[in-house]
Length: 95
Image (cartoon, rainbow, N blue to C red; front, side, top):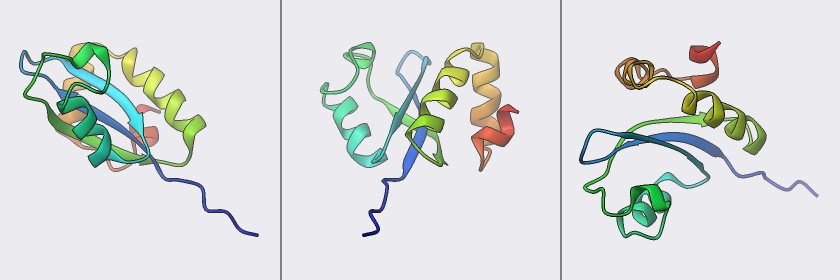
């Protein structure tokens, strides 16, 4: 039996005040809808409109969690550079 593992993505959302929120998900559209309707992260409630400014496919949940941690450690300026660069592979970009 071959069970397909879900695809994982790391994403960044820009809030109305210019902040960047970093998260991971298996379904970007669903997660953005949750954030937009206030059913996602508490950090984004009342901070709309929200704009998806970056997303990258990652191999699995473990890698997604590690990369999310690394991105959250970046300064605002470094995150802005990431958004501007739009790297296809976030892991390569951060290495």
